[in-house]
Figure 1 (cartoon, rainbow, N blue to C red):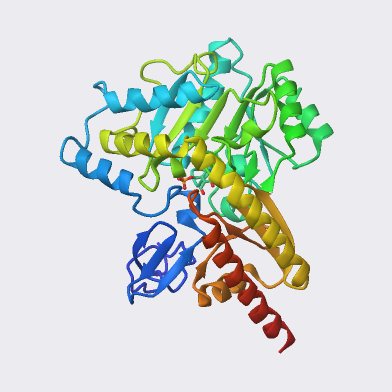
Figure 2 (tube, rainbow, N blue to C red; figure 1 turned 30 degrees about the vertical axis):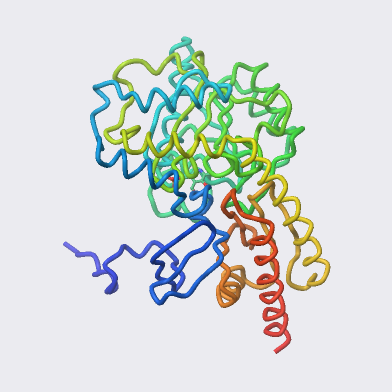
Length: 405
Ligand SMILES: Cc1ncc(COP(=O)(O)O)c(C=O)c1O
């Protein structure tokens, strides 16, 4: 018998799956973070689009404290009033009739995929199992999520891929139509704005067209708005920018809890018809703490003034970033995305650009296609956006000098 080689020693005792920046964060307030040495950073990561209202938003802190002294957890075998309140708010604001609460985006995706297949079984079409996903997408790290997204880096080495997943190429609409028309197709899953893929927004006309084709063929449409949703693009959900493009099922998470772990799968009553008693469930999903914070976050994010702020400041940001691209065409190759889901395709290796930005006390995230992403708090002010642009300008200067050295 052979034994596996011992893993390299890890002084932090954490499984070595993260490519971590050498920055130990201690405290946050609004769009600012401080490390353990008290050094301040302007945070344009926001937990990768998660602390949508900035760090330690006073209303969320207050609700968390109050709920923490009242009730943390009860099983879903009981009614949870906070769950019903947040479900009502979400369904009132969207296409959906029902909600299943989870702890993460991945679990919301899992529920979405299961809901789609169960729908077809309930309709007497159990052969409809195929899920069409897109290249460049990211849906989480469960087997179903990595298979649906199909990124080889996340799939390889984990054994056989799950059956029943088909990949479409972003932008190849004729080929997509042919896939949708297959009699074994259950659903299409897509991010209206790809996040990890490098802030790639699907054209609104394509979303509209995919909605029409799925409807015509009895195929369900699932949106993954885990990253693009909850105000990130200046509307509550990114798909709202397109006309007549509402999905049948939608996964959300991240900013839903403003930093508290919570996700949700939303569906129309029709799409959820197969999700009957006992077919799905969760221990922690929708617990009272998560629901209290989620409700407070929803109230703040869904305010017109919050969404207007995203539209206004993102407009300013975008204009300034385009100017930066014109001044540094050797460093910034493209500015893309929607609202506060901004991608800069850069010439240097994106991880190096991120480190150079960090040296300027600006935190940005990485992304596919050698992008860096800016995903700030939805409450970012124009002054903070201006500061971010100044820090990026200095980063570009350093990058240019490095390239010339
Ligand atoms: C679009 C999208 N879907 C799903 C997920 C998975 O969410 P989680 O990490 O909460 O499981 C993510 C996380 O980055 C995401 O960006």
